Amino acid sequence: MSNAPAEKSLWRHPDFVRYWSACAVDIAGSGVTAVALPLIAVVSLHATVWQVSLLSFAERLPPLLVALPAGALADRHRKRPLMIGAVLACGTAFAAVPIADAADCLTLELLYAVALVTSAASLIGSTPRISYLPSLLPREQLLEANAKVGAVASLADSAGAQLGGAIVAALGAARAVYADVASYLACALLLGSIRTPEPAPDPSTRKGSLRAEIVEGVRYVVRHPTIRPLLLTGTAFTAVFAFLTTLWTVYLLRELHYAATTLGTLLSVAALGGVVGALAVRRLVERYGPIRVMLTALAIIPFTELPLLLATPGLTGQATIAAGMFVQLACSTVQGSTQRSIRQTVCAPGMQGRMLATGQWITYGTRPLAALLAGATGTWLGLWNTLALGTAALTLPFLVLHTSSTRTLHHAPATPTSTPGPPHAEGEPA
View 1 (tube, rainbow, N blue to C red):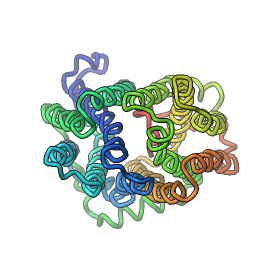
View 2: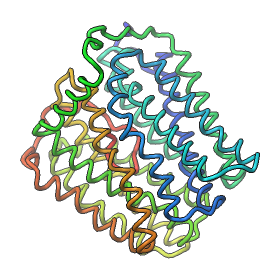
View 3: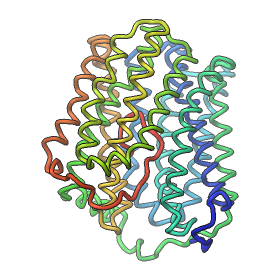
């Protein structure tokens, strides 16, 4: 760990600035592909609703497959090589899209493979990235560092989505992916230029088998009286949002006839809602208590889908959808950050990494199934009817939390130890 004085400004800490910049560049580049990939599938390759759901399935399957071993591996090995290797793998995979387009051999099957590989690599890289800061900074500066990373992540996510719409309009969807490839290369260079030595992992973490450590983490989470109901709430919330977001792009492009720049603007405005939620969450929890804050946010979220269902093509419809998405992601960030802070506070120190990985596995494991269900239901009932069904299902997370044992938790167990990460369109980042 760095021995820099705690009072020294983080902006004068060169390695933190490199880490902070790497996070910003990575997320901004991902914002470009968040716009470009659905447009390639829907507009360029004329994908059906079911085929779009398969693309969403490929993007969301890796957490179910690799989240648990990724958490254990991050505790067993140096974190920076894992982070660098992951971003280089993502950049290489995404480069296949514009290259295949230039060779006139771009297919949906290639998009599925790229989505699967990049999602898996991103998860393997993000797990050690979350726990890397303690080896870079003194403990006294971690809270400030996390706040700075969370803020720039939210803004980069917003800027990336807006930039993605503009680049797609100027260059085309496939060639716009080059911007994300460049962002991964820049991220790898920034991470590679960090000079602070990373301590070697504790050899004692390798005494047991990987499988035994994973099983121990799952059992701990399932049996914990506070962590379990909070994860069930997050799982219900993430599953319903995965169902809805699978169809959002298709509905906006085909039913409301939105352009790429409009789609980018909507995603950008939604990300700004996450910034507002991140700034407000601490004061809200201190004033009203964690459970009341989470229940209120979960109660509001179903109403934020109504503008999408009621909107018509045109500027008025775009403005109402943008407002709904803004409030939606603000509430999502508030409830997700609150429950994540409670889980980190009540979790035993030696179980933090495995609790995080288990939470990702349980919460995000529902997303690929939700994506397939959305594709089947959208094909059978139609896009609008399916979105209406998903909006009604958004009441489930509120009911899960309201009927759980945690509803009596009127005050946070301790000062929250985490700060919100980048806004996430599908609920709480586990």
